[in-house]
Image 1: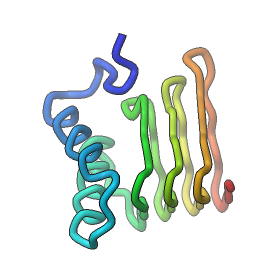
Image 2: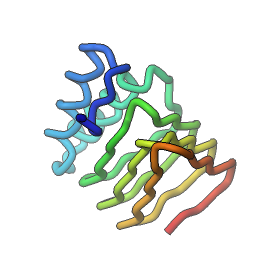
Image 3: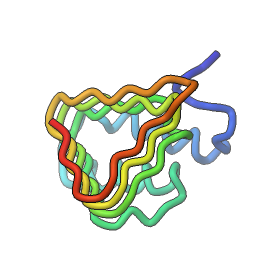
Length: 115
């Protein structure tokens, strides 16, 4: 079972996720824009104010929902295998792991800060 790419992602979303993984560890301005654009395509959301720094790893991205003004900083690990909803105005600090499992889910509301 491939946990990184759930079956519910379409072909173009899978390609965008692979591009994101390739660009994950680079931090040039154009590559930050490409990472953000790939995430917008994968999640099919406008994602206003999204900031994803370098080296952020996602798994189970098909089960992830992001709000507006979300900031995820360097070396964070986001596992949405069990479902994860991150609301508006959330900041996730450096090296912050967020893990969910298949039988639950997690939700972080507005104005949350995790570090």
